[in-house]
Image (cartoon, rainbow, N blue to C red; front, side):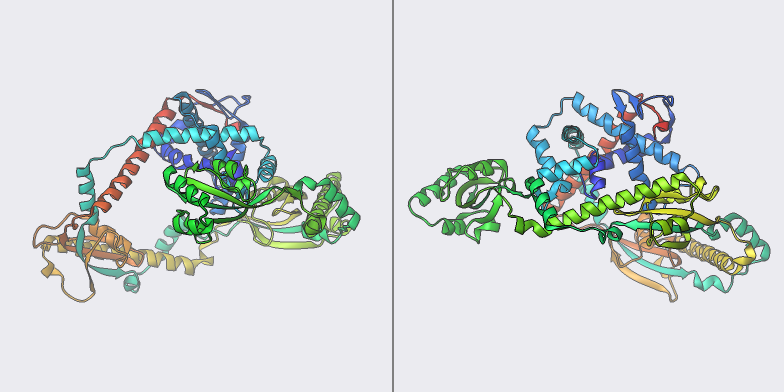
Length: 620
């Protein structure tokens, strides 16, 4: 559910904390684990065992999210094995997440109700202008079919899983000696020279026989295949198309205002100043000065640690209660106008608070919300019209004996033709998985039936019919001979460049002396580090992958590059300078984190390997 909320509103959520752990665990456990146990198709669960009973709807939602992500990345879900592998991986992630949550609960990891509430309030999908909105949160949860109690429980389980992960990850230890070795290795510099063998240099020497061309094309012809496409007839309607049919009267607006007054409730707001100090003694000192007649704003400018408000004399503006942490809010909203609080402790320090003004809770006046209300009402009525139109078209399609031209006339919707619509979608129409699945389904491709209505975008639907289907085909060699000849020629030239580089590298290593480097074409990079961006990455990696040369000797290696090939030659090594204490401390923290993540991934992998969980792939 956490993923569903985050994905639905394009925001992050606390569930993301487990993603890297689960991914690493999958790499360690391997594919074999996924096929060990399979539930019979009649099981009501997507997976069960080891304390797990995984809801099929949760599995389907996770699969849909993953399919959307893969399609946006250009992955062909119709390719053999892709969908089945995706189902296995999605189910494995869900199982591992459940196992980790259960283990955290079994081992006594608990989180307070306040921490759960803070996590909920920090969910971006529940905020308006950066502030938590209870009504928005309830609406968002309703949209994804979740109850507040279910969501709260999911948050609690996720936080408990984080506590387990943190205890394992932070339990790793690394010695200062090892840190020193890593710093010395990472800070080492190497004197580098290199020469490049560009592919273009070898093109003229390459010849390709007809037999070679045919043999290469037999193996690589799929690279030149035409995409599978269809020609579509489409009628569509959107919210914008029907909004012109909506009328809203003054009486309608006033009736809606009366029905929706709760929506326009403005909670009590207060103009508050504060002085923030580090200790209770300092806060009492500030309070004593105020009681002696000191100016609040002047003291705030002089003493407050809240740099954001200090310059304004401690002024925090006009805000509602939910803008502040609970101890601060409780104190500030218990004061009368002009009153000053006793010291109030929060996670930020100690506050002395003054209330300068109070705006009582009230319902916004009709005139102040009239424009907003009219926009809402028009949109609501347009949504109803669009939904009604979609239902009428759906009933008409189900009756049969109708084509798109007739539907276009009956419902006064333009009929358009979309040529060459592919499985990657079309920005002018839709790239959504459900739409693409409909277009390329058997009913449309084989039976040529009308498809839809189907949603396109957030506020529109379409009805389609495939009028022509162009299958993906590998063209005859003669059709693409020029392109194939170019590809084969470049491939052979690249291979020639690689061999030339390997021959030179071998001769340099055998000579073992920098004096063997003669002629033009060599570039001197001087002493470089492992992250030096002035040297092409493949050459830089090759320079640090080879063994250190002996004194007054050289070492060389051939490497494939984007341009063709190259030879890297290292003639000297310079040790890293002594690291400052702050650098050593930061590196120690980074290494401990890396080791912690490795330990955590191994822990999760072991947990999964020992858990006998049966899976029901048919639940998808």
